Image (cartoon, rainbow, N blue to C red):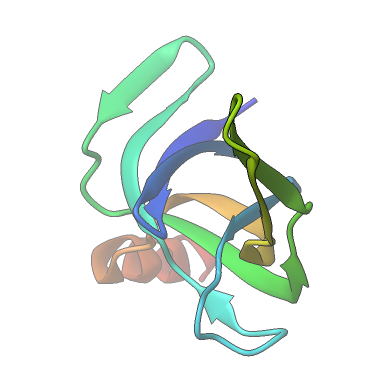
Length: 115
């Protein structure tokens, strides 16, 4: 099964086709297709670092809020207590395809073979 390591939102993720993952909030609308940077392409016993012509296609499923993170501070014997919370803004994406881009020459070769 093929996998790729992509860079999106300043972080790296290992992905496979059909996988859904939460990443930092993206500016794209729901349903938009995007092509993150491919750092590594692997699977079937071979690995290619920094592949030329490799492409990962992902679709934006929706925008969500992450789990609430509670933060509490206190200082013993001083009566100081402070509480705060935070929810990260996230985007859920689904990986559609992983593979090489079809170059113009290979498209022409395929057309000639079909004729």
